[in-house]
Image (cartoon, rainbow, N blue to C red; front, side):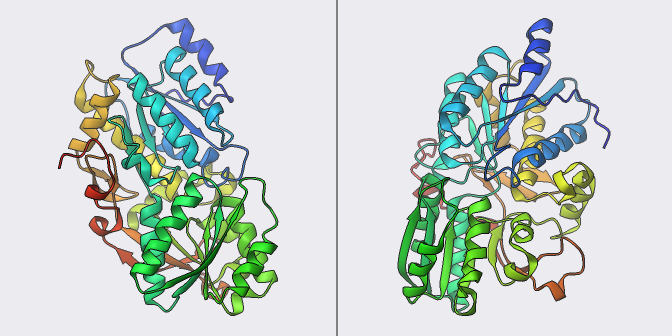
Length: 407
């Protein structure tokens, strides 16, 4: 894909970019975007280089609009302290205007505070905590793609309706996993189901889930809810099959992607339930984005919802920068206010809007992993089971506790 912008992908602290930026001095007609995510840990396949590719596609699509766009990236190692250090350097020394992606909820929450203090912009696609549009909301944050409330409402409510009414949770013991379990348990009970038990495991140190799976098996549950993501979910589902739990229990991955289905193995993953706001084969628009980026994606796999969110969030951000004009293009709060004032529209998510709390609104889709015999192509791994409309998918704005919301 030809790129009409200067694209610079740096190392952990973006050193190659820094030298060039310092030599040219601050330039008011340059907008700099930093993709901050996991490049080496459990979420590297679900975010990582693929998020950079999708952000790059948005920069190319935006084209020449009277200012230059520069893109850099760094590995935050899923550590809040590392993330804060990188963000501060980007903002203080490298004139970065917007930070993007931010998987791992503790990282997203930590960086959101720095973004607010420096009056920059954060477009979160990878971090799942709903607190970003609740008690931790700021005038500088937009939350794209998904959150714990949306994942839980779609997956838990729909599965209870389908007979999966007794749940056991295996939970990553940090902010994201805790909130995911909390929200899913709420919707299980609200839909008439029961929570039979839970087991929290140390994150990210755990690879052996056998003791937690045995607890699930003994609980009497008919659904295992994996309140986790990435390699943890992959390992958990694989090991559940080793114990034969798939014969008596449904598997619900409260955050998973097509690449996770592939990593689990098509035979073992069949019947796995998961929720998303994007799937590469959902409609003509999602297929168009996939065709545009797939040759640059790692292992040439289709973009997942987080990576597609980096495309869509970047594109909407750049439209807002253009709309506020040169005088305010580096004023983070002003740009985010413009992002909220403008309807969103792109080929990945279609039309939507951003609420006053920073929550971007799109439908939520419940998928089931296909049996291998039903797959028409290599990445034809999911079938749509149910759709929750955009206005029903997310936590009501009145319940989040966001200080930006006027009663």
